[in-house]
Amino acid sequence: MAVIVVVPSPDTAPGPPRIAAALLSSLRAVRGQVPGADRIKVVEFADLRSMPEPPNAAAEAERIERRLLEGWWAAAVRTGQGRGEPADLPRALAATPHFAHQPKPPEEAARELRRYLTDRKFRHELRDRTQACIGPETQVVVGHALGGLIAYEALCAVSDQAAVTLVTLGPALCGPSVVFDLLDPPPRSNQGEWPAAVRHWFNIVSHTDLTALCEAKLTARFGPGIDDMVIEPRAVTESLHGYLLDRSTGLAVATGLATEFR
Image 1 (cartoon, rainbow, N blue to C red):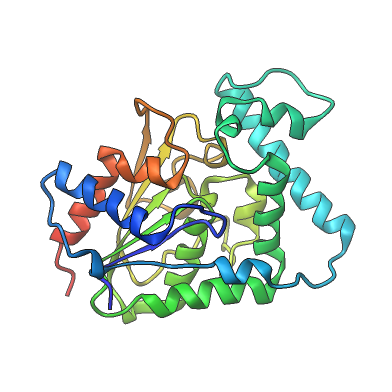
Image 2: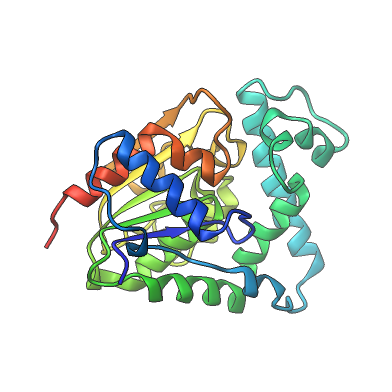
């Protein structure tokens, strides 16, 4: 079983070897423990992306996607990446520094996240596959973007059968309130559930990552105990590869590897 499990967003292009290499590079840079590449498991979802989506209520799907776009635009205005109330919201978002570096336009990103939130079978397939990769030997789980949300929900399902450090990188958990409202398990009294498997939680968000700036500090949603960091990297880091190469990620993962919970 893997010591480190990396949960990318389902649409992530770099393959497992490149992802593992970037993480190992960060660990070497901070002089942390460096496990063998064979002890890093990158969860792969490519085959699940072709699953047919069941018929949805079009109006409800459109409403959720619109709320996602509006939340990202509010973050754009707040951080100086956008101004005013555009007539064409997807086009305005596409012109921001964040989305200009993304492989998918904003409306496709919103559609993928909305599908995870509303397609029960798809959601459980991604979450179950992630959960199956987490075992007694796992010390650190890293989740990026939608993968951060998947990792969180998988760890809630794992319960206390594991004891890990969770490292979320620009996670969808930090996105518009509709994401938080539709969590599984659902929040109670406006408080998200803390996964029993998580002993330490680092949340790292780039100061330009619009999809994770609606509530960049997760302590507001999940309570105290999270090491929230809003970083200002030298280069654009909204991609998984960029986040993994940041020193803050290397330090967070190294801390998890050096901590004995059992």
